[in-house]
Image (cartoon, rainbow, N blue to C red; front, side):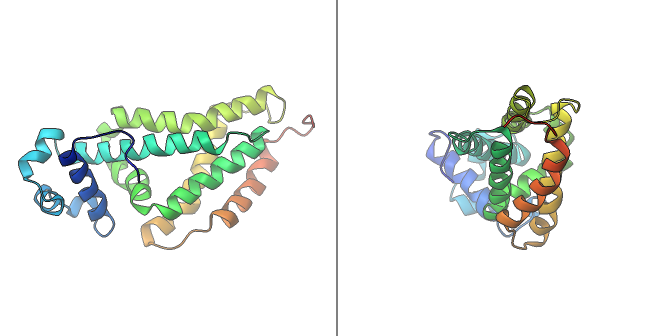
Length: 201
């Protein structure tokens, strides 16, 4: 994954080391000493850039979110219609989980056990990331393409919840995911419930 911005080399080595370790180990089993050894830096340097191991995890997730937020915005450019954009967002979201298991593990499993995560700056980036989908839903409602009798925020929750539900078991067990098949099945279920019956063509 490309860095979202230019960081000092030492910091980049540390975040890269944690990502590498998360490919084979659970976050709770990783020590700062192990991160430092993997990064080829002193343990003290970790605390120069991060408050603690959890803060390091949050910062790694933030870098992922900045990267994927930018990608999501690019993915929907040139696509017409809210339903088509939602389909693309669903596919992209599942594809990220399928191809970047470290990001998937951090977002779906690791950070959710920490209560301070929900008041962190990183969680604000999560809200920004999922805000793209919310704006598409609002667009669809305004254009008469999607139902206007269900709150857009609720529709977003349903879509994101469905994506997580069909992906999380495979993420936990290290099984493969099929973005094409899962997107088709989810869209078949979701759109029959949220498309306006008399939507304008």
